[in-house]
Structures are given as C-alpha cells and as structure tokens.
Length: 303
Length: 303
Image (cartoon, rainbow over all chains, first blue to last red; front, side):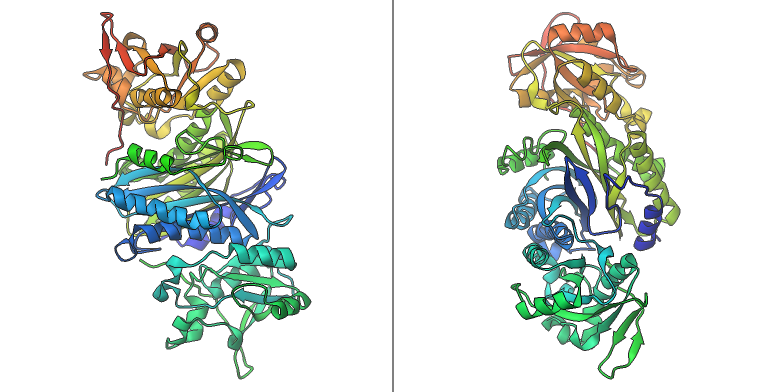
C-alpha cells in the first residue's frame, strides 16, 4: 500500500522547479509561485467521507465547512491570508439537492468568515462516497511567507491553543482556522518557521525539524493538553499524536518568544513547549528531567 | 439526485464577486482573477474511476494523463497557457507504489508537454475507487482571456478536428489538449468566444449561446465527424452528443473566419459548422434545407 510521506518524498525527488518563479514546491503547507511580481500561495486538500469526516454523523454542511477550513489552515501556516478558492465535489448518486446546497453553504460559511470567495469548481456524481477538494490561493501578509524550513538552533518552539482529542470533541470538524492569529504573529514578531498541526504535534514538529535540518527538545510538562485529551488514559500521548488540532506550531528567537509570551496578543493562549536544537534528534524531556529519545509517529488518517 | 448544471446555476445565483479582482467567476472554462496586475486563469477538474476512466482498463498512467489533460484543455479554451498545477489523489487502499508512481508519471507526461510543472498536492488512501483532482493556473496569451460570452450575431461557428466516438476510440483518455492551437488562433485572429468540447458539441454550443444571449444555426452537413463516429448508426448524433472530444469550439466574425479557413494555420483542420444568430434558439439545418428546432441534450458522464 502507498505510504503517503514516502510517496511525497518520491515526488519531491522528481520535482525540479525554476526557483525564481516557484520559490517553494511540494512539501510545505503551500506551494509558492511568483505571479505579476507578487508571491502567490497555493494549497490543495481533499476531504473524504470515512477518512476526514463521516457524512452520516456530521452532515453535509459540516463536511463542507471542514473542506474549506483545512485549506484556510494551510494558508495561515504560511503566514498568509486567503484570496480565493475553487472546490470540486464528487457526490454519491442519491445525494439530494438540499444536501448539495448544505455542502456549498458549509464551504461558504468558512470562506466568508475570512473573505475567501469561491470562484469556481466542478461537480460529478458517482456511485461512491462523498469527496470534496478545495484549492486555495493566498498571499503572504508580510514580504515573505513563513516556511517549515526556517527554524534555527536555540529557537523557542511555541503553539497556539491546546492539543489532543480533536477527533472525539469534534474540533476537527468545527475548528476556527488560525488566519487572524497567524496575521497577528507575523506582523508583530519575527517568526522563523511555522506549520499547522494536522498530522499531530509529534509528526508536525518532525516536519519542521527535517526541513530545517535541526532537532528539538520538547518539554512534556509544558504541552497544553485539551480538556478532551486530559480525560484520557495517556493525555500526553493524545496531545502528541492525535492530530487534526489545526493549531499553529511555530518557532522564533528566544528573546522574541519572551516578549510574545508576556504580550499574549492572541485570543487563544500561546505556550512555549520547547527549544530547537542542533542535534537533529527529537527528545521529550519529562518531569524527572530524564531525556527520552522520542520516535516520531504522528497521526495517520484512518477509515 | 443532484443535476450538475442546475446546481452550478444555483451556486452562480449565490456568487457575488468583486468584478475588479474577479472578472470571471463560476460558469466559464476557467475563473479569472487579478494577481499583482496580471490576469490569472484558475480551473479545477476531477477524474473519477468509473466515470471519467475505468482504472482496470486504462491503467494508472493513462488516468493521470487524462487528469492533467482535462485541465490543460480548459486553459486552452480561455485562450491561455498553463503556469502550474496542483493535484490531489484519493487512492484505493491496496493500490501499490508502482501504480501510484505511474499515476504521477501520467500527470507529468501531460504537464511536461506544455511546460506546466506540478508544484504541490495531497495524497489520501481510502476504501473506495481512485479519484484525482487537478487545479491549474494559467495566463491569457493575449491581453484578455476568451470567454463563452463573447459570441456576436453573424459570427461564424468553427471547430478544430473531428467529433464523436471519443469514448470508444479512446481519444477521451489520450487526446492532445489544444494549447498550441488556441495560442495560434488567439494570436492571429480576433476570436470572440471559445469553449472546449467536453459535454458534447450540442451542449457546449448551448453554453456559448446562453452566455452570449444568442442562438445558432448549425449546418448538419458541415460537422466534421470522426472515423469512429462515422461507423455508427447515427454518426451525426454521435458528433453532436458524445462529448469528451476536447476540441475547440469558437466563434469569430464572418470575414475573419474566411481568412482563417483559407489559411488553415493549425496542424488539425478547422471547419466552419454554422452561424451565431439573434434568435436565442438552436437550429440544426439538414441537407434538405429544412430547419429542425434542435433541443439541447449533450453528454452526461455515466458510471
């Protein structure tokens, strides 16, 4: 069976983009291309019934909302703001007009909240479950987008909100994409690297480290655990591995982090959870001070 | 069950775009947006196993090729050239690495032929058939894109190549997108309206007429019928309705058409097949000179 990350790496190995016109190719939250002297962010994500949502449980409107919100989260992770989206929908035969309309209204609900119009799309009907795909275009709010590859040894690792249990609490369907938070962060602080937490803190911090050729010390006690995850047998494992939190994970210089943490400028709390290291290894530092070599696992979508 | 065109019309009724930044919204071959002073074409299309191809018959490489070629055809239909594409793939669990690689190589084969790099994407695995979605960005080769809405009474209606039987001949999988032909046409002649024939000549001419608030007289004897369709019981019906020809259907002033037809500047023949009228009705003119009121039907994808 195809393993997603190794397949994407295989693709990256075959991708040879003109760096002037395409500064960022596959492997970040968005691709970046130059259009008319402006940097354009491009991201595409699919939402499949049985993988990213269960239509019978959540309804078409919520599925549409999530489809749009996932792409908005990717734009946020680049320090960007959305410009426009296109959406495709493969509908199960038998889906009726009112469900189709609810799906569209869900897409619009998430898009309208961040002034992201739907400018085009494609509709098919087939004998299989619902699948929707959203491609979103955006622009960096600062001069340059924030990449996964910008982390520097000594950087503070910070996260917005709290982590874990998103699949159970329903946050994975109804989350607010961190567009406003990303804008505030990028305007006010020199953010070095950023990603949205979709695969899970462990896995997504791994992406930052790999792309930055760095490592990390994670402080187990500092990781903000969601109410949902706190009730679980192993709350820390949930916060590290559940995924689909759609919070921002980012790094910045130690001094800038001190200012940010004192300011707390966002409507959600920002927490420092560790430090970028030169070790090219990931360590989890527990309360007994012991360093546990930590093997990245990360969340995989399950049917 | 959802009817594709009425659903898209419902969406268009709810779309209120800022015309300065988004000159063309849903309902043409591409949306058009302004980015950094440049007009950007945006199109998105999905290819579903069992609808647009049958994976077991055509293989993953051909499915990938078609996925990219369909979007290229939409860019061509706007008088555009491609800049970049992103692709998503929902893979059936059990699809192996070599099939996934063939799929990507098929996408690349079509993209590379027209200097259209794949700059990003998304891969999921699910318990259902293969579905791929390609979103493509392009730019108009002239100052403005060619829309469906530009047809004028008295315009000649022309078509590239020959029509019908694409599903049987396999052309619907292996066609060459008319990027080069569209560029040549747009550079050399003032094309008023253009579309690629995906739904079928009848249906797609209907799109041009509706968007242009016009009608058409189609000359039955002039319609170029493919070898495949010529062997059918009703070759004309095949050419009118089969769809997925991915040829260019366009209109231009009578005098310009005379020059174009004398020049025959393309590698494929260009044929005049009728005239745009003010009637807001579609007529098929048969060899006995009788005017048959012609009801638009067009091709619908079947599973």
